[in-house]
Image 1 (cartoon, rainbow, N blue to C red):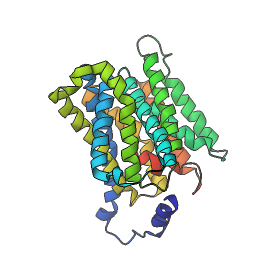
Image 2: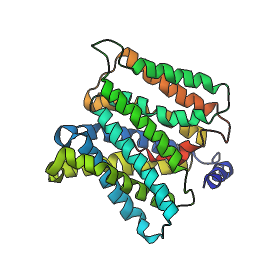
Image 3: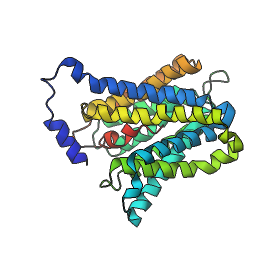
Image 4: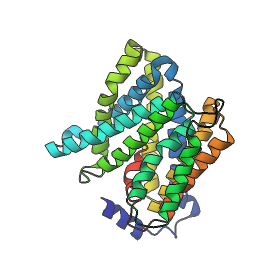
Length: 313
């Protein structure tokens, strides 16, 4: 799949297209970043009613329902190996979503995204063999250090929230690793099965936390809307973006997600960041963008277009 996509990028000549047409993929990418962060911001408002666990269940459950109807994975005859790989993939996806939403319960959106982004960034950098990447590792560590709850009682972040965000980063890294398996499976069907597994992983926690409140029609309608805005819509927009944006540019744009999340959190939720926290987010963003720009054509950043385009935050 990767080789086919790479060939498509190399062979596509867009220089003769009108500027407005060439801007469509970038507009789609911007739309994806905005919708996923705004959708997550609105999802955070459900925490009061059904808790972080119940909100995560709404997100994964409704997304799985839409993806299953869209891709109809039951039409495929699955092998045991494929199902085992998808179980790991979906399990990591579910644990990542649950951990991230638990982090959002006490952390601002932009900061939680910045910490979680260390997961895919670590995967990319660990597989790198270039000396320059050590600078990006150091910068990411500086950003993380600035976010740790050591800034004093007023501006310190909740330790439990930071812990859940780091756990989400770990599961995002595992999600990428497990997502590389079974590359021959249709991506839509794989995501549908993976999201269904994720919903099953989250379900016990969501039911234990919210109980019968999950069946309230008002909460269900709000949960369905946020699932569409934060999952289905950005996923579709990113597919459009990937048709006209090369791999490096895509990776750089994805690295800006914590900044968009910080803006969305400020506008939608009124979450104001300190200067220290803003600098920390900037460090993570620059580290992510730099790791992409200083990578070779076929080295460690390769998982970014195949896995981060699903925006499972």
